[in-house]
Image 1 (tube, rainbow, N blue to C red):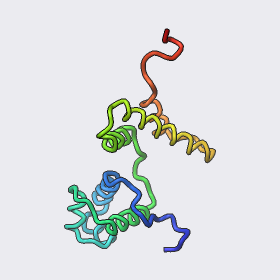
Image 2 (image 1 turned 90 degrees about the vertical axis):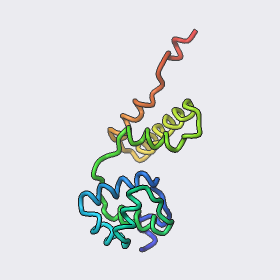
Image 3 (image 1 turned 45 degrees about the vertical axis):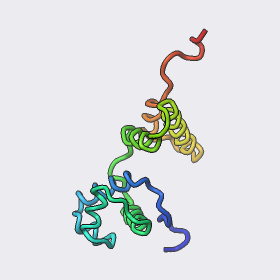
Length: 141
């Protein structure tokens, strides 16, 4: 790979998202074909899909292969994002988890807008999901 390649050299995707991507690709193509293209055994891929955590080099190979596929079969949705935030913040109190989700949704909006892009619908849905509920500041005595 050349230095300008967009293919990751260090693991960057959370394992649950990587696993989800591979499950969809294996259903679309076949487990054996995907395993062959990635360069691993079908049993190794089956184990990964079943919950095994891949070694670092295998994880990089998995991410590279998925990135090369170059297509998103479906956009992210609010449910996936919320589940991931909840998994990542399992040791935090609920109000901190909510704040983390709100901050990440805001960061996504800022990132799209900084690139002069309109945030996609799933980001807008995320912002609505994490919008503070309850009394507005003007209603508080």
